Every structure is written in structure tokens, then in C-alpha cells.
Length: 256
Image 1 (cartoon, rainbow, N blue to C red):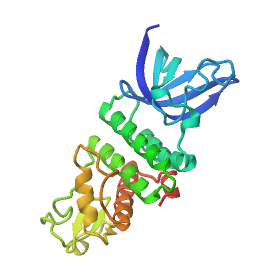
Image 2: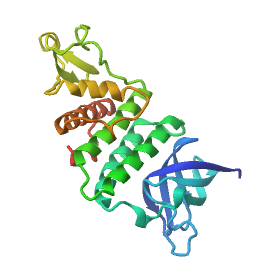
Image 3: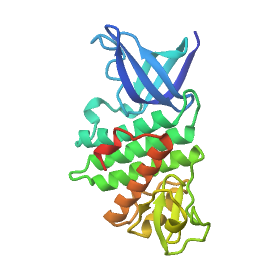
């Protein structure tokens, strides 16, 4: 059996039989895949301590039917479970949103290296923020929302941000809402011509931030924006994501 090496993030794990564990991975080379680690729950396993949720890991895999076996693992950068940030629960809470979104949005064995790189960057930002003495949950929402927005764009769900999604009018300062069903910002004439539900926007800068999210570079960790704008932007993205998936994400309800 030929071995394959790849960088990966563990999204989810589940115990199998007496000592095995199955892992849902998002890898840079192969996309989303399932892999099993045999005997990893035994204290004598050489894999113990190297398969950590949301920690970048270099894996050696061998194909086993429709999945893989993990034969070797090494945490990238020498991280360990003890190096989760001080506010571990907060870190895991926001990492879980990314994990659930990746699982719902992407099919198995379809590589998206740009998404993997974005996931690594975003998890690092969350980690750094959660290592602070008093991390800001609203800023963490915005950081997560930016990657979710970029993932939707990669999959072809880039919303309309320059013209009203209903009337086609060019947008200035007269937008009044956002429609996740239609996929874009709506102007003040739209409620009279559309029967689709929309979220009322209280802050014009929310649309400005969304337009910045549409660019390739990441900006949310250093963006200068009021807390209210950050919160409204995250709310729009979370709503849009769940509309495209077709059902609520369990992880999102804990931060809204």
C-alpha cells in the first residue's frame, strides 16, 4: 500500500471498536477525507498526543477501501494539547463553527488548498485572540465570518454587493437590508417588489466590510470597525451560510 503524506486539520473524531478512533480530516492535498487510527486509544500508541482537534498536523496515510489509515502523525510547529490557548473553551467554540461549516459545505476528496490555508490562518488568529487576557467574542465572530464568506465564494455563492439583488439598482447609501435567500443587499424599494424575507441593516458600513471580505486577503483581525458593525456583519454571514446549507448549524446558535 502506497503511503501519502499531507497536512491536515482534524474536524471531528469518533471512537471505533475497543481502541481505534475514526477522524474526519480536512487535508490540503485531498480535501475532506475519513481516516482511522488503529489502537490510538491505548496509552502505548505512538500516535497518542499527535492527533489533536483543530491543530495543524502532518499525516502519513495509506488507503484502506474508501477511507485511509493513519500510520504516522506529527503536530506541525510542535504544538501540544497543553498549548491550547488560555481561553480553551472559547477557542473550541469558534473552531467548531469552522469545523461544522467545512463538513457541511465540501464534498469528500475534493481538494481546496486555498480553503485549507485560510482555515490554518483563521485558527491561528482565533488561537492568538483566545490567548489574550480578555478576548473579544464579537471580534472572534468577525474573524470566523470572514473565512465562512470566503468559503462560500470559492463554492460560487458570492453575493451581490454592488447592486440591489432585487431591483438591480446601483447601491449608494439607501440600502435597507440583506436577503440570504436572494443572495445580496436589497435597496429601499426592494421590500415593495419582493416577497423574500430580508434582514434589516442598521449600519451602512456592514456592506463595506462584506465587500472587503470578497477580496482575497484576510482583513478581519486588523479591521477598524465598531462592535455593532462587527456583530451585524457576522450575523449576515452566519445567516447566509445556513441558508445555503439548508439548515441551522448547531455550533452557530451558541455565539449568536
